[in-house]
Length: 195
Image 1 (spheres, rainbow, N blue to C red):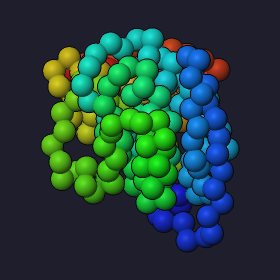
Image 2: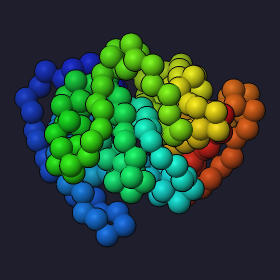
Image 3: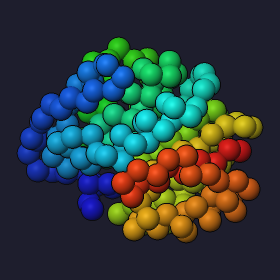
């Protein structure tokens, strides 16, 4: 889909959605051309649940492919951590900046280009990857996670079986020497590897 890597020149069609998590109502501004603009997608919801139940830590974390920001914002609030939210779509970056301010979160929002120029090291790296951008893109995200994670840092990704879950699970096992399925929910798998 073009919205993963290009700027959408069509007119804006802003929308506001709500997402309830652990008795907190989050409000997100969305727009045409961003992934899952009408609601937080089920895979992201499963990922948020899994990480908040499974991970304990502090400091900064990376949300790769942040979209308009739901994963990074909810995890930042729930885990009391600082998000580094990375996105290639310029419209999504603008929305993430607005949404992070709405929730009074002190975070870092970066284009992929600016992110690659920085040397962030973190204890947590999460992604709902852009599978439609191709397998190489997803594998590059996994490789980036391995490089950015501190020793004993955790990587989580959400993937459906039909999106190639078995091959990504094998790649994680080869890269990190470990992989577990933290959650399986309605065809969505949360895969975790620890550096």
